Amino acid sequence: MQNLSLLFNNLYKLVLIFIAVLVLNACKNTTSEAKTDTSEEKIIQPTPKMKYGYDYNLYQAKEFKIKRGDTFGAILERNGIDYPEVYTILQVIKKSEVNIRKLKIGKPYTVLYTKDSLPKAHAFIYHPGVESYDVIQLKDSLYANKVKKPVRVVELQATGVIASSLYDTMNASGYNSNLTYYLADVYAWTIDFNRLAKGDRFKVIYTERFVDDSISVGIEKIKAAYFEHRNKPLYAFEFQTDSIKGIVDYFDDNAKNLRRAFLKAPVSFSRISSRYNLKRRIAYYGRVKPHKGTDYAAAVGTPIMATANGTVTKASYSRGNGNYVKIKHNNTYATQYLHMKRRKVRVGQYVKQGDVIGWVGMTGNTSGPHVCYRFWKNGRQVDPFKQKLPEAKPISKKLKNQFLTYIEPVKTQLNCLSFEEKKENIILASN
Image (cartoon, rainbow, N blue to C red; front, side, top):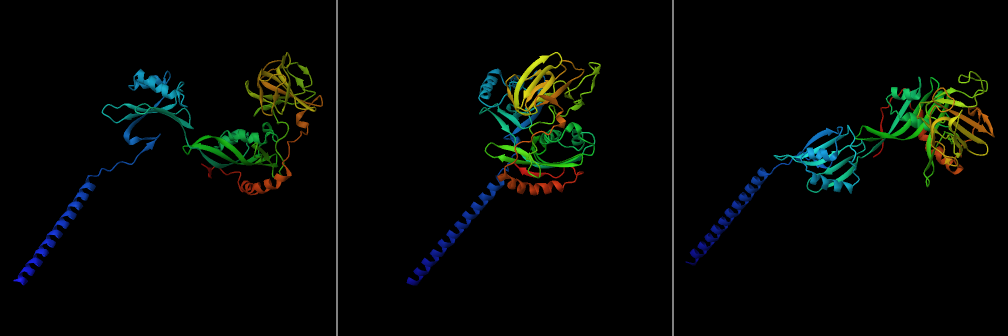
């Protein structure tokens, strides 16, 4: 009897274990099925398409251009936003950097609409220029932000052989037209760009700024250049001589400063229409009369620059000179600028080399628009092209070795450029 009772107990335990196993398996299957069902019901979200800080999957975007007579308020009202809301939005804009008081005709803007059965304008994005854009949120949390686009600075190379002018050569080669003016500034004291010879040639290493990868927002600087003028080679290397004051100059490959005390000309890219000539026959007078100046023909309104630092001693008008300015540079040198349309300086004012002192005109005795540039040395008018003009302060001995070490690889880079190469290789300089 005892054996039967023991056997019954063992069978009972086996049945309980079997039932427990069945229950566990059932739970596992149920959980697995539940997981499977959950994964099948999961909704796959589209990849965000971010632009201007918004996911374009959630909005409908429409592009427009500012038309004559458009105002910010009128644009919002056309998009179903009533005046009270417009006023509230304008109060938010007032506290930001965004300026929408004067929308420029032709400039693009974008309106983002909600994807509802009745679409509503949600945001206004305006592009006043290529370097930034304005974002104004019109619904929910109102705000206005000016967003600056990331700028990429790249190092470029330009080379060419002069056929007619530096500007024409640059344009024909597809370079940024402003590179002409940057290069002219580097060599303003050593090369007269009004007298370039056919066959003169150049190589330039420079940096240019871009947004949206391909839109140029200007040349940053010229790093180094080589200009061969009338078979005379002239290198130029940018170098900072004072890190505290941020003073940067250009030096040749022997560490000689390219800057001089006087610019070669008072106007950029004009032509010399008449030189210093003591026996010149002047058409206006119809007889031989000494011409003690150098005439630079240029369009009316062309800026006239002081060729050196100095103090204005005369800023007046006379029958012969028209509007004119005279500058004393030191006890040795003085310069005068005649026939201005208008003067910009006054007597006693200190001006720096390159400052605009007036604009080209036709006042006084003249038959065409130009500036007559006169040059005094020790109280006597002389031909500026025949003077050995003083140089700028040379590089310090302490920095000279540092400079020569710095330019060695840059000079090699210049020398390896061919004059026929086009602007193809772009080297990332910074982001």
